[in-house]
Amino acid sequence: MRSPTRRAALAVCVALLLVTAGCSGGTTPTSTTTSPDTTTTGATTTTSAPATTTSTGTWSPNASVEQYPPGVAANGTLTNRTTLLNAHFDATANESVVHTIESKTANEHVVRRFAHAAGGMPTYRTVNRTTDGKQFVTESYLTRSNCYSRAAVPNRTVYTVTQNSTSYGNYCRPNGPFVGPRLHLDSALMAGNYSVNGTVERNGRTLVQLTADEPSKKAKELSTTSYEGTALVTPEGVIYSVDMSMVQEIDDSKESYEESMTLDTSVDWSGPPPWMGDLPHLSISVVEDGHALEIRNTGGPALPANVSFEVYVENATEHRVPHISPLGEHGTVTTDARLESGDAVYVTAGADGNASSFALHNEQARGEYTFTAVMVYGEHGNTVYSLVTGTRGW
Image (cartoon, rainbow, N blue to C red):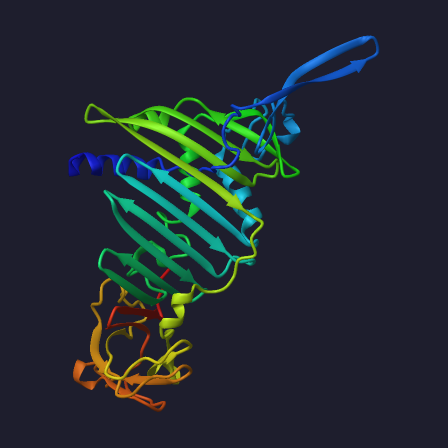
């Protein structure tokens, strides 16, 4: 078994060289049938390179400059991956899509899925990770204001309900840097020297094939000694698949890494996962011209009585960020009755914001303290609530 130091080193390299790839039709065909493409012009007959047929489509070595995706130069090399990625995500931003990313190392197998509905929201993400034989599953459902997540680890399942909160990492951020498919695609394309290698006809769609058979200069600097990758991209820049494998030399021994990514644009994805029905959907807002805080159950089952919340507040114009560093005034309030779906309770505080002056009300009330930035944190059973308003969270 590799040492923690070696595992950490590999993790750093892979984090910088993460790649997305597609399992279907992403590699140069192996099992094939061929037929020459002949063209007769006057008395002269020319025969181009043969097409190659596989179960996933027909590959041809011929690709015209007009078919090159955005970011590919006239000589066929991928010179600007940012341009290509922008084209990909601009084209899919308002479509119902699923990106699937599968990665493997000697001791770990991870499958990530990122789905979003037409219009870009809501999104649903899953990460199924098996490390040294132990399985960890994380799911998150993200709306424009709230995030609901479920983490199943050995012997325990934990749920979180967040609003504008970064407390629970990238799973509850729309563009979490280590979660979204953009990082994986960017890292994949960065790690190899990609150039056009023909086209693939699949499901009535023409895909330009980009291949790389050596690591890029940047990848070599990160201890990558070999790299092979294939990407299938439409002329408009939509990346349907990437397959890659690489070897890194760390502490005088070799580590292999494989990753594949596929894009599914044929789905009609929508709706929350079933487990969201077990969670009270809490949200907070400042009301009464800043003199009260509302905690509302916007849906789902009732929040039980006797749930305590820590309330962190600021009333300065240039306030601190309470959900990162709760340095402002704070107090504790406890529900005295069930909070049914649609119901709300209200928090007020005295002018000085001392802990003893915080109070919870079942009816709308107005206190002396002016709330500007607020964080509410609470736990009940296996559910954690981290709700932020009045300051930038995501």
